[in-house]
Amino acid sequence: MFNALKNKLEVAVAWLDGQPAGFGAGGQARIEPKLPAANDGHKSQEVLPAPILIPESPLINFLSQLTLAQRLGIRNITVSSKLGYRTDQRFSDAESLYKWLTPGRKMTFDHPWPAEQDRIKWYRVDITAEDIIGAAEVAHDTDSLKGIVGVSQF
Image (tube, rainbow, N blue to C red; front, side, top):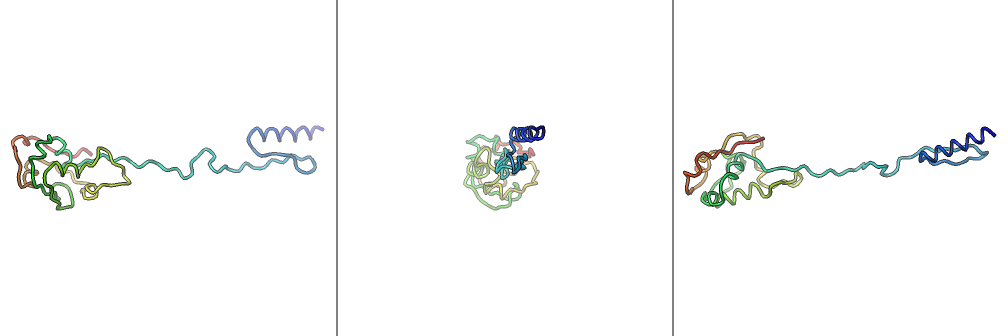
């Protein structure tokens, strides 16, 4: 009688622990091993959000310090390796260049934008007004650009 109570107690404990249990032939307690559930509280194929990138370069930092009027006054500007990018693309003004460089304040890593693909990643030369004026055909109000420096922050 003691063994029968012991078997019933083992089945009850196993059932409380979440393990499938029952009685086999001859009244023996049968405890089946707990198989991991499909999810079991853990995500096996967990999809993490894409890392966030903040557009950054010495050229972006320089242009971000300018007002809209100052950016519109810098015309026919050509981006090159001297400004930290692997391209010889020409922009009608510095504002359109700024929009190409920074299509949004934050971008996801899995959808790179064209300027990020052309950026020289380890370019750490400060961009000055002279660099911008040299890359542009026309620059109005150049005195207001003096003293502005685009530095690398990362």
